Image (cartoon, rainbow, N blue to C red; front, side):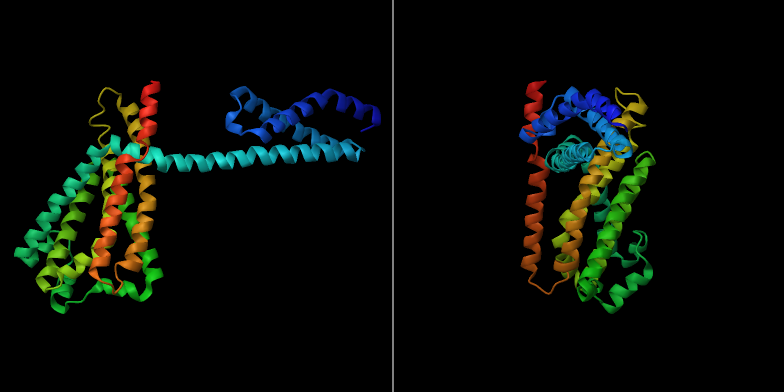
Length: 330
C-alpha cells in the first residue's frame, strides 16, 4: 500500500492493537479464567481482527516494521489464547475425575447396585447349579467343549497370559472395554439388554468357577481373578448401572418428560462410562502382568484389598467438599 494509505491504515487500527497489548499484559499477570466475559469476547474479537490486519499488511505494506510488529502481536495472542484453552481442557479432565465422576456415581448408586445384584444372583445360580451338575454350565452359556476341556484336561488356561504379558494385557483391555461398552449400550433396550448382559456374565463366570472347583483347582482360578477382579467387575457394574440408568428413562421418567429424562440421564450415563475407562486400563495391566505371575497368592489378595479400599474410598469421598460448598451457595 502507498505510504499515505499505510498511515491511514495504522491510524485507524492502532487503538485496537494497543487494546490487544493491554489485554495480553493482563494475561501476563493473571489467567484467562480471571478475565470477565466481555474481556474474553473482546480478546477473541481483536485477535481475529489483528490477524486480518497482518494479512493485509503482508500483502500491501512496504513497511517491514509494521509487518514484524503485527506478526509478533498475533503470535503472542495466539500463544496465550490457545495455551489457556489447553490448560482449560486439562482442568476439565482433572475436575471430571476429582469431582464429577465420583459425584455421579454417588447420585446413581442404586442403578449400579441393581446391576451388581443381577450379576451376583445369577453368579450364585451358575455356581451352585454347576457344582451339583456340570452339564448345568451349558444353561449358563458355557460351551460344552470348554467344559470338557476344563474338567477333562485340568488345564489352567489363564497361565498362558504370562507367556506374552504385553500382548495379553492389550487383548484383555480390549475385551474388558468391549464387555463394559456392551453393558452400557444394551441399556438402550429399555434397560433389559443391560440386565441380560449382567445375568449372563454372572451365570457364566459362576459356572466356570464351579467347573474348576469340580476339577480340583478352583482356588487357583479364584486367586488369579482376585488381583484384577475388583477393578474389572466394578467397572462392569458401573457401566451396567449406566445402561440401566439410561434405559429406564423411558419407562420411569419421574417428574420429567421422557425426552428430558433421556437427556439428563444420558449425560450422567456417559459420565459413568467415561470414568470406567482408566479403571479398565489398570485392571488390564494387573490381569496381564500380576494375575498370571508365579507369585504368592498373598500378593494377589493384597492387590485386591488395596484396589478395593482405594477405589471405593475414591468413589464415596472424592469431591464431597465441592458438593457441600455448592449446596451452601444454593
